[in-house]
Image (cartoon, rainbow, N blue to C red):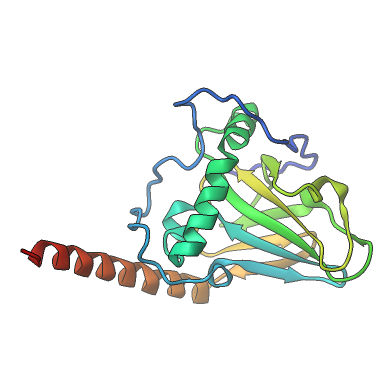
Length: 213
């Protein structure tokens, strides 16, 4: 992940259609971790999400990395994978405009805790290996995303594009303004254990299939 301090994010991208087949830029094969087989995970989204709770809003950060979301329970994986597929044209368009060839994706949600809660979608950033990274582009998912204000229990969600795949197998921090939360050893341990379990379940399933007459 390269250092790129973007103090004025000028690429808040709406839905785009009509991208020719074969031009998908996001979620290409990523070095540094094999893709686990889908359908064998058991984690919940809360197990691989980070939250920052403030007076007015709660910010939720969920990496949309196939190496990670394939560790989720089948329904959760299908939901997130389907979300990426449904927004792929807009993601690819945003990536091309920002000059990205293999962007890292994250689903960022803002939840209102009070009436008329204000939020700033451009105030989310990452800190990784002492480097500071702001999103290169944002693809809104919910219609409330550009309003920057929510009523109680309303939420706004967008897909964030970063310069490089997110370091989901290493520690990093998510920041909203001056508040931050860590993708720490507890999260990494949970991911590591589930990767082993997923491979074990897949191997056992394969063994059962080959043993049948």
